[in-house]
Image (cartoon, rainbow, N blue to C red; front, side, top):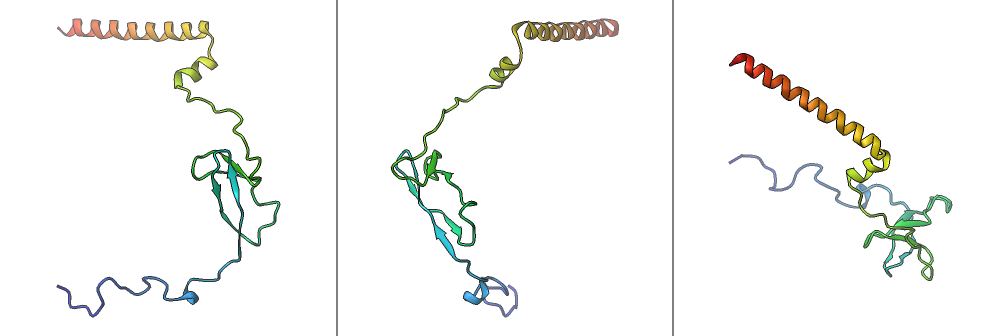
Length: 125
């Protein structure tokens, strides 16, 4: 056991003891945002921010859809893109002829490697 005179769980600078230690409070404003699923969120912004710099839309913290300030007309999702695989992106960039050429080059490289490995194994043994 230690012979220190401290109180267990406390240390110098462990945290604020009152308002004077927390710094200055900034005036805040709360805006309401509504998504098409009916969720309402109230994020806070600094009151010193100009109205042009405040967002007109945010992502709904509940469902991730866009949320706007107009409750009667919440923003709609333009189009939900399905998840694409790596192969789908490759197919967008390559034609069938380019894909066949790349496949032929890869197969010939593999065949050459196998032939060299077989020749080396035959020469050793």
